[in-house]
Image (cartoon, rainbow, N blue to C red; front, side, top):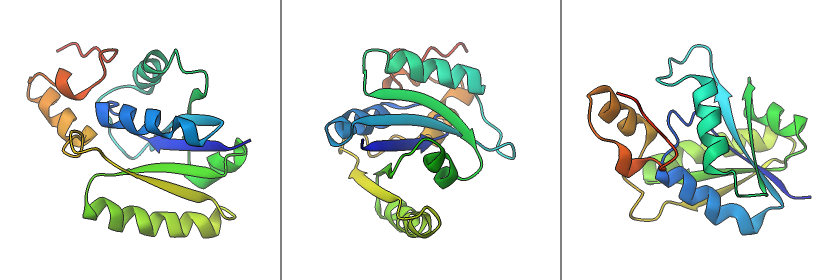
Length: 153
């Protein structure tokens, strides 16, 4: 069984994330969209809220599961027998960073393979960081998040 993990903070999940995940579906038997919990990182939304959003966004996709983990992504992949990671690339900076991480993951993850998908032009400007800044400033971020993401001002 080809199991892939799409890891992230999803603080919040964006339309770009959803596009990448749905485009990945034909490649794998199962995709686990997993929130990586880093206690040193301050998030805008609680883990429970982010998990609920993911569950709601992907409720009709039988090949998608939602999870969360602490620690190394490669260890989480091992724990659920996933041999693949999915990562999105918006620009050259993303590529440089993700290439290095994927090479390290391949070594410490016993051959864990990373699949890179290029963001479609309509999503290449969307990032959770920018969406958080819009939300914190009281702006309307609805164009950048799935309809299931309800943000109460």
